[in-house]
Length: 236
Image 1 (tube, rainbow, N blue to C red):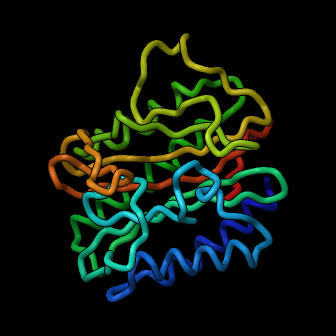
Image 2 (image 1 turned 90 degrees about the vertical axis):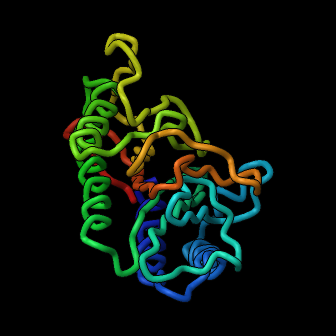
C-alpha cells in the first residue's frame, strides 16, 4: 500500500495542475484513467458495482460521487473536488482534494479549514486512541470556523476492499467507549466532508451525485493513512 499510495499521489498532483477554467470533468476523468494505468494500477472506483468512472468530480454544491461528464465545464469562481482511488497489487488507496478557480478570500478560507481539519484528524490516528478522537478533531475544526461537518456520509477503512471498517465520521458519533480502538497496521481513508451552509444533503437526478440541499458550497479532502507504532503515515 505504501507504493500504491506513492503512485496515487503522483496522479493527484497531475490532476490538481490540470484543473482550470474551460476544462471539463470529463477531461479530468480521461487524464486520471490514463495516469492510473501508466502507474501500473487499476481505477478503484470502476470496481464499485454500477459505477463506470475512475473519478468522482463535484462542483460547488456537489459533495461526493459526481459523474465526470463532458457537460460539467469548470468556470472562474468554481469550487471543484476530485475523488480518485487506485487498486495496486491487491490493495486500494483513496484520496480526494478540493480547489477553487480564482477564489474569493472567503472561499480560500473555507478550503483552508478543510485542510486544517484533515491535518488535525491525521494527527489523531495513533495507537491506543480511538476513531472517536479522529472524529472529534474534524468536528472541532469545522464547527469552530462556522461551517458544518457532514453527518450523512463517513470516511472508512481501506485495504483489500475500497470500503472497510471502521467507519470514520466527521462528527462525534456517540460515546468514546463505543468507538473502535486504533491498532498498529490499521489503514484509514480519513475523509473531511463539510459545507458552508447546513449539513443536509440530497441525491441529484443522475442517481449518483450527492449535493448540498441548500445549494451552498461544500468541501472534500481525503488521504489514505496507515497507523504505525511511531505515529500516522500519509500514503497518498
